[in-house]
Image (cartoon, rainbow, N blue to C red; front, side, top):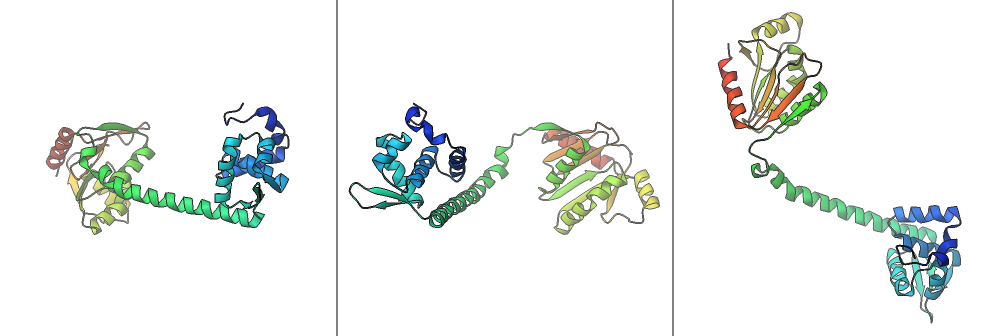
Length: 265
């Protein structure tokens, strides 16, 4: 007996033809069960059959065959002749496949609506501060991953951004998104040290379009604070193995905020 409760000896010849085996797999991918696919293909071979004929040919138990045939009828790929006993025939190929395709499309559309509903109902839970631990931190390794995380955090800004750049090149990388946020009413507090700002004015014909705070100290560090809720800091952008720390720890946020305000030239 196999896992479907079918007799292996009775149905072993069904899969001797590799073509039939491939057809079974295709029908399964289209949404049929293995047993449904087996019964359907046997009916394709026989053209017309009774439930008893199909039981003997496929090894499907008589207690199961009628529900299988009813399911295939609901899929629109076989028809029932009101004879005694009942005879079953496959629907014309184009009609049967069209019926199957319509059911698949309806099921797909239904699942898409379920996903939309999930999005509506889960968004408030994900956005709620109660779902976020009061203290959370993790390390991000690699320049590309850090830049991606910065863009991700900037996309969530609600009121204000505090951001400090170690060099003009990094500033220009984020200038477009900062301008978009500023146009949307977000308060932008961006800064560079005087040395970097002077170099920017000397080397570039493109001057900053965001008003820049001048910082007293020059260093390779970078930090981003979003709405006083999240802090992302990078200690050394010049390092080939650069890494960042992202945290919601209020103490670190307060310390960084104090340092930022005291470091203004």
